[in-house]
Image (cartoon, rainbow, N blue to C red):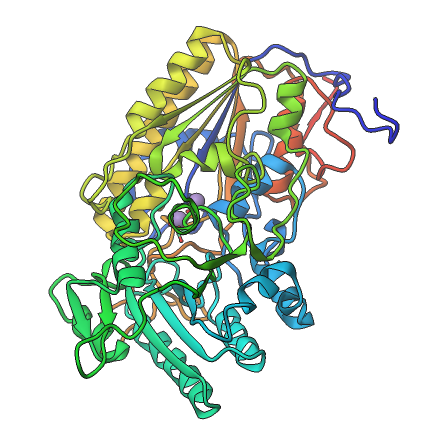
Length: 559
Ligand SMILES: O=C(O)[C@H](O)COP(=O)(O)O
Ligand SMILES: [Mn+2]
Ligand SMILES: [Mn+2]
């Protein structure tokens, strides 16, 4: 124990034994909603998850996974993987990036910090480039924050601004990109009225350009580099609105996957390549899909693709995206300090941990789980296994994804008895849900359910315990609804497919032969959320949770 009285040592739980293998299963994008034709989870055959639900209320319940329960600004904010896994792993609710940026913009502190002062030095002789996701989704970025940033730099001496847009259609409705570009163009026109040379310089769909994650496909980042830095892309337009409208008119085009484009002047010259002396800000607050571009902009030694020309720039992230890598070096807003996560506590108390997912969600059960920290706490006690995801496809083409392989790895880890906690993320409901393909999402949910069954069977064999939950909703509702809950129709009478997450609560189930008699969900934490899960899991490993953690969801009744 240090002089402050702090200790990593967890007290023994008075009733719950140690040494049981605990499987911690996170179904990504798996919320609870009434059955109907747009609820892919209800439509799919999910016998395993259905049987868990029969354990309600003692072994199955719902927890909150959106809004303030996960540190987001308002109850209208849907949950997402970052805040969901942060809460699951850290056991406390931290004000998250979205909120911290809001506060920094409202107080003006964002314009006084080290990061802003650093990029400001380029304002006199260079261009300020803003790169990020253009939508009001609030998952990775928010349009109103970009607007305030533009206004703020305009008031602080910027002479030339170029915005490199990434269209969304994943956290917001497909087709909404057009309206967001119009709004941004209005704002840029206002800056021009003030004598600032402000334009959109390039663009592309977020899943095709720049916003890859966990190094699944560096080509995505390269396409962005080519357009943003080199000013090269297969499509050239003189105006961004025309670009987005034209590219969207192609068969099967959608906002998420628009090809890269650059904006050129009347002579065909790109209006905003990034050159020596410029400043760059990536304005997304969320980390996972900014780490790769941050590396490409910041690292001197970089071999993931040929950058061709590496401009000498001042670069800042909206936030620091990786606390362990200190990436990037400069940022406008400090990230939440997510410390003392359950992963770190458990490892420091000797709990041997195995974590696994496929690439697209691998960082969720490692990096996000551990408070946006990469790497192991103790490589002797931990093993993190990444199964390579398919790349270059949309996941409705392969809706089963790697669920089976993840489950088999988890099963083997459980049966090996080398680990006390085996933690996985099953991506299907979420990744296929984001494609908006209802049929494929039903297949995806079935595959996830089969994977859960494999893991629970292994837990049965070793006398262990399982915790099955989810990080936020997605596949349980695939249609945009009006306030009364009725599906919204577009002008041509078609339903509007919801590709995004939802505001729904998620299930949590506990069980397995290792659960001692009397363990059940308490009924005095009705508003429990994802942050209550960490204390629950710590208890199931036989320890008391740290006193400042959100309360456990379980109790041991005297039988
Ligand atoms: O990044 C994404 O894929 C979406 O914006 C959010 O999905 P996730 O929070 O489940 O990763
Ligand atoms: Mn998720
Ligand atoms: Mn998602």
